[in-house]
Length: 259
Picture 1 (cartoon, rainbow, N blue to C red):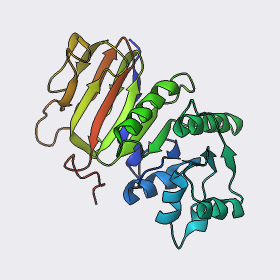
Picture 2 (spheres, one colour):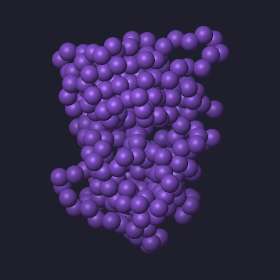
Picture 3 (cartoon, rainbow, N blue to C red):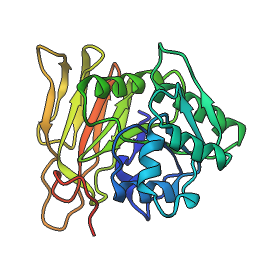
């Protein structure tokens, strides 16, 4: 059986091998995450008001942190910030379609630019989108579903102590031994019932159906290993798209990178 393989937190390792592109969303930026991702990214983009956060975080050195483009309906970016990036010849791409989120539209533009520039990319990483308002968090998850028809590339979302990644139907092997993994993980059947098998978890699923109102695998953790032994990969087989979530941070709660 062919398995899709991904180490979700490789993107946050300065020594990680994934070739990434970066989308920044309109939420406060974690400085640790930002610098690692920015330094590795082949393309960098801001979705609308995310430019405000980039502008604030890079005060004093903004010329060194110019995104490849800013897109959106521009109802969130401030006039000052918009003017600054326009003066720096940063492309401002107006995407007025109100049926899609700024995240979804920004992703579609990035995928097109990857094709135009013939870039070799392993993963698209999104910074932000998992904090604050619940409706906006759900909009982030909805974009993960849209992404399946936009690009075959993995799309991961990181913020605070959490990472989210939508598993497509089929079999997956997830590397969880970077040293950045927290203690918790979960499989959430957001789009509907998912028949699921797993290995590598403390509470594995054996061809069980995950479904809201029946069974949801939250607050799971990884299979125990002996002292000094590497953590085993997690394998997941699902017949429908299934949301993988996992903790980030040395203790799984801090959302900061180890020293």
